Image 1 (cartoon, rainbow, N blue to C red):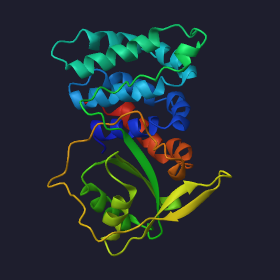
Image 2: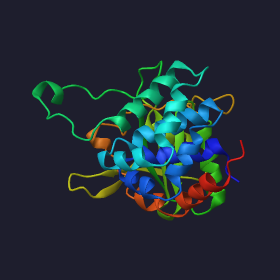
Image 3: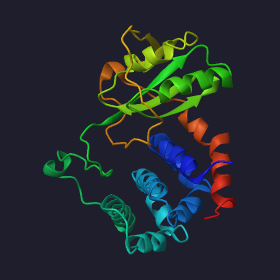
Image 4: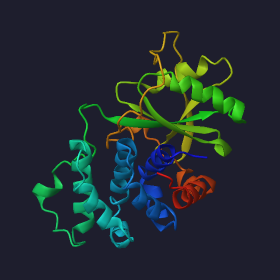
Length: 271
């Protein structure tokens, strides 16, 4: 059985990618479940839920559906009035509420508005930006190899989250900006079982596999399993030579995992 934090953080990871947002909002179980999560007692679950909603609201066609979802606006209002919430939670809740309440007729862009940097919506004490990379792991054939890869990535200090696409032998990793893809490759190669390449797009838009340099340097590790590290909006990595597209994400989001998550969201709220 999936626990609430596990489900909502994975749903947030899916929502962080624009190609998944329409699928999530149109799913019959996800929005009602997120509304219920707004009443959760755990600050971690609340924050991940608000992050998910803020991602979904980045797609303007989703806003009306979200606003009209039964209980959405009322739950956000109740959350804003709840005592004892952190400044980060309150600020993010207000931002989600304001975005959903704003009429869908934005003012025409002016040169000044067009040149203005898009505001960050994840409150954080760090200025470091999160980024992600898609890795191709040729030996990723079963749960055994997947577990090896998970164990290797969990030990790397700076890894935020990761998801697998077993059918295409890929792993998408979100990590801090001060960490390199080569460091991830070194950690995975240290299993002595898995080999890793980076998935990038060439100038024609076709995906190609690029070898990653594996060094003998010791990878900085976590001494214990870390808390879920904060994410920031400047992702994916902007380096054109490392432009990565997660081509299977939309298929995955409408497939078995999303169905399982929706089932959890609508059937198991025992708080």
